Image (cartoon, rainbow, N blue to C red; front, top):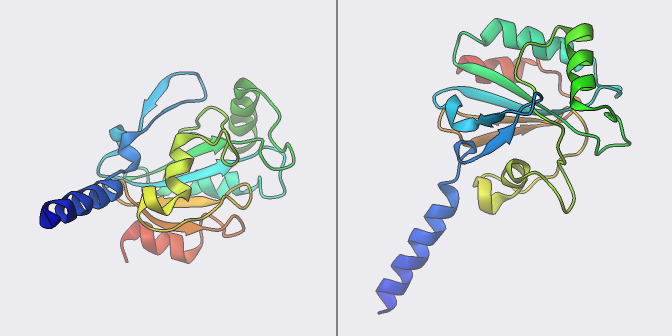
Length: 177
């Protein structure tokens, strides 16, 4: 009986770490469902964005990174948030226009979400909670924090907001070095 109970605990523990980003559906900036399971086999950078932040110019490098590696099993997904000093107060349509007009953004942008607090988006609950992501507990410190996801949909690294998208460590990870 003790062995059976231990086996059940082990299976439950393993199942906690079996969750991946592929278990989530989000809403894109145009209001359509975006199934993250469509990204199976790709490396993914998830980044929370803001249009009126000192780090907003990172959109330029994000777009450059997207263009350089979009045909190499890599994608970026932007999640606008107004969680940090109301630095993205606009509507989804206004955010989309801003990103396209000012930075030529063509990588997938999602609808504005909460990345902290009681109403945190379920995907960000996964990204920030070790018992769900299997890597670490962390919090979104500011706009443009980056989450690196491997080809199996697992979180492998959290990159701080001030680290630029074209940083050598990120480029090496994308290239597989």
